[in-house]
Image (cartoon, rainbow, N blue to C red; front, side, top):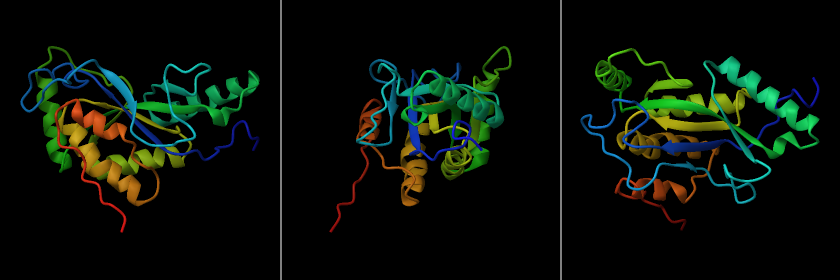
Length: 208
């Protein structure tokens, strides 16, 4: 297998795009949701001092993609890497993140129920804009790890369907699971994301 097509392991990255009360069109005004303080924004929640991801950098060091399934995402990542090689750039210098709609709760049944309630407020059925995961924080963490391990993408941009509960579940459950396995290191940007919803900041355990 040529280097152009082979999966080269890169640090797993987890970003989030925070907008309004969530990405679901019925999230605004729904029970338990509230809008972000300030402008919508995208932020990388994982730390890497040698490779700060910035959507505005030039040349780009991060590319966001959308896909209907994992295979399509993997093919799109391969296409992007091939184009970088053709342009004389190192494909390992660009992080490819796939958008992933998420709605998570302590129990998968609760997450599915919340999505059904949100969907019921719409006049017409809603189709996901990209990959979608409805379930638990740990289940989401496992999916994110698999996406990177299988070369589907270098990480994800999470699109919370409702806020701020999904963000809380992400910070309390998904990121710690990934950290415990040495897959990511949470960035200080996590606290900034929490501040946008006036949520309690993470409790940090100091090394002895």
